[in-house]
Structures are given as C-alpha cells and as structure tokens.
Length: 322
Ligand code: PCA
Image 1: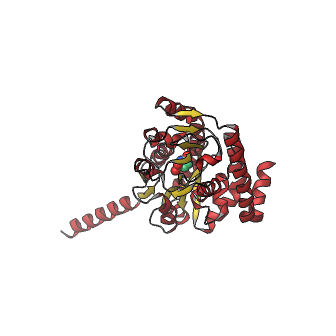
Image 2: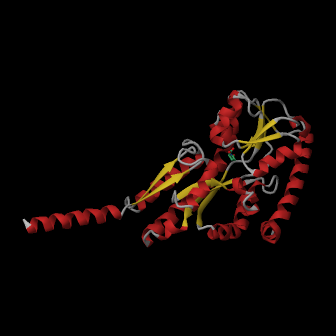
Image 3: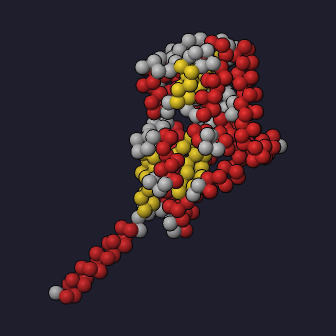
C-alpha cells in the first residue's frame, strides 16, 4: 500500500513537472484575424510552437478582443499579457520616438521606411527597455492615403469634415487642415463610418480593404504619405523566464516574421488598392493642389516632431539621411 502510494505521488510529481515545463503566453493584437499583420503573427506563433516542440504556446487574441488597441502596451508592461502587438505611432504622446514613422512625407517608400526603421531602432529599443519591454519585430503598413466620402481636390475640402484619427499625428493632420479629428481604432472603423461619426481619414489600402470602407467612402487618394509600423513587444521578464533554447527559438521566429512581414506588406500593396477600385471606389493620385497643401502639413509636422524629439530625434534623422 505504502509503495503504491509512493509511486502514485511520484507519478503525480512527474506530471506536474511535465505540465509546468509548458509555458503559455497570451498575445493581444489590435487588428482582425485576416489582416496580413495578424496572419504573420499567427505564423510566428506556429513557428515558435514547432521549434520548441510545444513548450511555448502563444495564443493570439486578434481584433482587440482581449485588450483594446490602446491598452495592449500597458497590459504587456504590467504583466497581464506576456506579449502583444502595438501600432508604434499610437504612443507618440508618451514619447515622440514612438511617432518617428508617423511623420508625413519623411519616409514614403518601402526602401525609405526600412532605412528609417534601422535608424530609429537603437533609440526605440533603449526606450522600450526602460519600460521592461523587448521589441521582437516590426512590420510596416502599406503607404497611407486619404479616404473620403466626397472628392478632395485641395486641403480646403477637408475643412470641418469629421476625420478619423488612429494616432496623435493623424489627429494633428486634421487640425492643420481644419478637419475635426476623432480617434477611432481600426476595430471600430466600419461602425464609425456606418453611423456617420466620420467621413474621411488616412490609412492604408490594407485597412480600407479589411474594413470594406467602400460601403461608405467612395474616394481614395494615393498620397503615399508614410508607412507606420506595428511592433511585437514581449515583457522582458516573461522572456527572461524562458530557458535558453526557447529564447533562441522565439528570436529566430521573430527574425523570420520581420522579413516575411516586410515582404508581404510590399507585395500586397497593389492588391489592396486594386480591391478598392474593384469595389467601386474612385482611386486617384492627389491633385497638385492637394499635394502642395499636404506638403505644407508635412513641413510643419517634421518641425514639430524635431522640436519635441530633441537631440535623440535629430540623431535618428541624421542616421536616416546619411
Ligand atoms: N492601418 C491602421 C494603422 C495604419 C494602417 O494602415 C489603422 O488604420 O488603424
């Protein structure tokens, strides 16, 4: 009887050990499951699972279902979630370094966006490290254009228009053209359009496509104003708690996700814009007048960004322009 009990206890102990050897992470993300960023992240989670033979399980909670877009960073910092995805530019009020890639017309192509990403990386990583966060990878959205219910031929056509913003800088653009900014995350965009809460905004063809915005807005101006990035952040504490081989597997899967994400983003840019046309939208290049008005906005905003980002910001610009 005693031996029997001992065996049972030993077996239970063994099971407990085997169970505790599996780590589970929750991963909140802001964008829908079928979005290309989310698909890339799901692949990342699957790669980690495979490389660790199931030792690290990452559960992706897409579409702001676990935490809303603007709550995800704090959740990872606070340890409520171990890992999560954020739109860097959404946090520009916390520190202008987060808004580096939201400055209009600073970096407008994939090649420039890559250069800017490399230039900003050391300062961004240092800032995140102070917050107990580690950036695993970042991936850009396609170039940002203007969506509107009415034709927009110059900046003045946006006066008084209800403008959906997703970051402090997209709100600032609205102020500078005299529109009325309302912050609405991508997960609520379709609803905001349906109820008439907003009638114009800047985003990528990808989000236009995800949100089927053609049901309400009929005009897209391909201004290619900037390529904002999403970043996947992990709690340094959660990362440090992994054994070395698991850490290596996460880093390898992250590097692969970054390469794959940049490639997919660029490759799908044309597809997204074509889908807007296919679904009845008028897709056009911005008029010369609109371009000139937006350039003025960009000039103002780079100046404002430089002022708030100070010497650190200047070092990024110098590295970028080199
Ligand atoms: N889509 C996201 C951010 C940038 C983009 O292209 C959004 O509209 O919320």
